[in-house]
Image 1 (cartoon, chains in turn orange, yellow):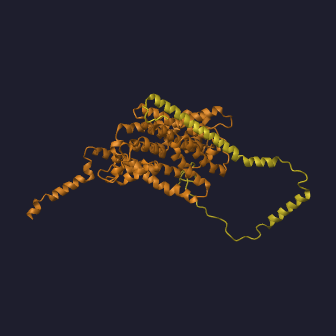
Image 2 (cartoon, chains in turn yellow, brown; image 1 turned 180 degrees about the vertical axis):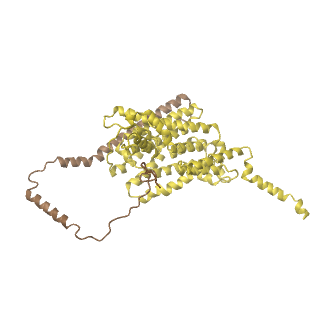
Image 3 (spheres, chains in turn orange, red; image 1 turned 30 degrees about the vertical axis):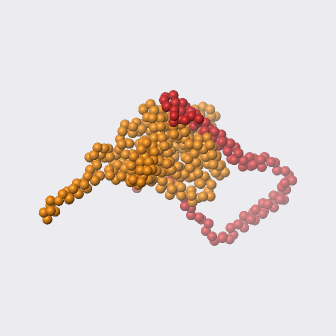
Length: 401
Length: 117
């Protein structure tokens, strides 16, 4: 009995257990950082659940952020991907669940699979009916390159600046695809910025659209789009994928997958595949992508002045992209005949964010003229923006990758 | 071929990269505009042209005589009056399962009616 009381075993065991607890790690050197990140994750979960800000990805990103910042859980190890490379040899020595899942981001698999689903859900009809929309999709990409320069001026490296600029493309998978290759250390903040601002499109865009257009311009009614034949719909993805991939091989993974999904939908002969990529495949990949991108937002990577700069640059990118779209639509009107003029409000839809940006054009247009239906017209630049941002990403990759 | 990784990036390179990239984005998408316009000309207008051709062709007197018109009209009348005399007794209403899409979403509708309770 005496021996039992004199033994330090119980005390030592208890001490060992207490020090192994996650709570203890909060009092270590970078422990406060983990605590702050957990609070940020809670806030993002609130935005996803209560405010429904892009909940599909925001919720999984926030939960990935929460898991990776729980001290001691060991779900994600930054050091396995240090220096922008996958250290395969280290994987055998205790890689966590999220490390394995992150390989899909690192190798550029998830964004492409998501693009297959996006392609199957996208109707390119308005773009085929009005090919001029491609120009508005191109104009909105100027925001990417303006931010590229601005980020460089703020002290980021060219690779990091390119990844920050792509936020202006308002296309989550493209932003993740490019950042994972050019600046993986910024993946967490860039993904959070991209998806946050995509959810805030209805807040960011309308003031810019109103400021750059007159009441008369906002009231322009556009002529009805022509019918698009099935043959055109089927040939569109085949031709676009071939042309863009031949011109820009770096954009081939994204454009190829986008057009594959669209061909599945439009051909009408692989209905089962089309439904699968739109639902099951897309949902599964969204879970993996969100969780692992969130997992990269560790305290070390996220809690630094760069994150604040990225958040600021993200708004600039979105704003400039929207403004360029609207201004280019106005410029196009100078060369179009009366009756063929386009409503400049559809220009802002050139920043991907499908179909949110097109809905914003419709809403702002109807505020001026309730009988004006711009939605289908805005869908043209909107889907052209997806193609445009993939092309821009391919270009940045070919220059900086 | 220039190895861009070997280039030391400064403001000159950044500005050139930006200008070339913007020009290339426009060039690629302008090319696509022309390709799609060509599509429209080749594929979309074909049926219209065919219809226009048929419409433009004048009907010659030899093609239809009054008796023939009367016979066709009478045949059509008889056919239409005979139609639906006997129902097939098969229900032809099909239930359609529509896959979800933001376009048919009532939650995301643009003209939501106020929810009066």
